[in-house]
Image 1 (tube, rainbow, N blue to C red):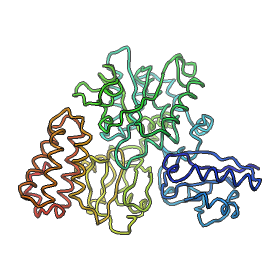
Image 2 (image 1 turned 45 degrees about the horizontal axis):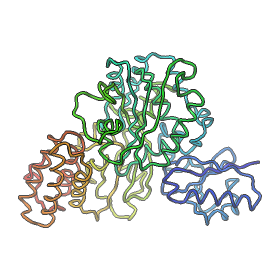
Image 3 (image 1 turned 120 degrees about the horizontal axis):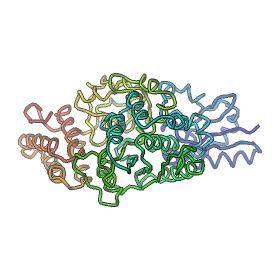
Image 4 (image 1 turned 90 degrees about the vertical axis):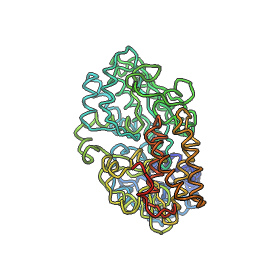
Length: 520
């Protein structure tokens, strides 16, 4: 009987030696005359265990990790092809607490199937949502998305159904669907995991979006630093054309949708939707004033649905299992699940897909296992480099859009970067300003000039030069950037800076933050 061994080809696992491990397993099997198939998958998201090797035996998949090439002979000696015990063994993947306590909805297939195999995708319910959507009109598709409660997973959390309805109501004979795959926030990797581990899901979601607004063309705007995702998407798109899921006649429905990947320009600002559209049109990535919204006048001036990868990848399941199924997860106005990405000074870094409602502390300690150094976690930045630094006193905050707004923070793309009690928060505030200065498109003065002056002001504060005067100046500067910037880059930089001042004033030599004239 031929054993099946699963080794991820996810780029995170590859960076830890997964390719070498896969080759070692094949070589060792040949030496021993063992019959096996090595199946390459995405990652399960438990990155502290990568490379994670799974073996299908006895009707279940047993996990071993982290596996190095030098461990392979010992695994064969222990009978791992039959699920044998070994020091690197963790039992069934589903029994590992980190994994067992999640709600794998969008990520149900990631790490399970071969992302290059259309058969694997179909065998696990793939394209069922598309088949159901083909029987609906555009307004009915939009209504289903609205009923599901799905909100944009890219940062702003705008209701997806409203965005799609705006696009469907906009008069035009040409419309577009664009996936924002320019995943540039620090500590985020869920988009990459989907594109490398379950690419057909994104493709299916984009086709359904095209049916909703009668768009016949779509683009995936992919960051250039994702070569593995690029190759996987290209292969999946070619396969989808071969089997009539893309093209001029989708599954014999006489409805058309064409899709291609465009590589990004390597700038953080191109993750902002209007700068992305400029880049996609072949121009320099710079912010467009709004209104008009992209749903009214987007790519080449036409109505455009522009959502991030996780938003579009959530759509097929809604049409496969129904709006109620998806809406039953979560809390308040935050429905469904979000793939939280935990990194930084953390013991168990990786991806955790959970329904909205668990607390930040549960994410950091129950899943993340606390800091890697064993020291107390002092702060965590949620929402990428523009997100607020959250102190331990607020770790009981539920992971929910409105709850985070209530503490002047944002969930953003779901990335959480942890810092222990050795972190210098004045230095982190400076980093936020420096990041903004480096990545600003330069179109508006508050962002272009304010970020540069912000770095200088923080440097003077850290050097104890006229500290009181410069602290007040920093408060005024963040107020100007918050309310005067053209887009979210300059407008959100005050969040990390002000949160650092507010919650960790001692790192700035400030005694009373109430005197600093902070914008919030």
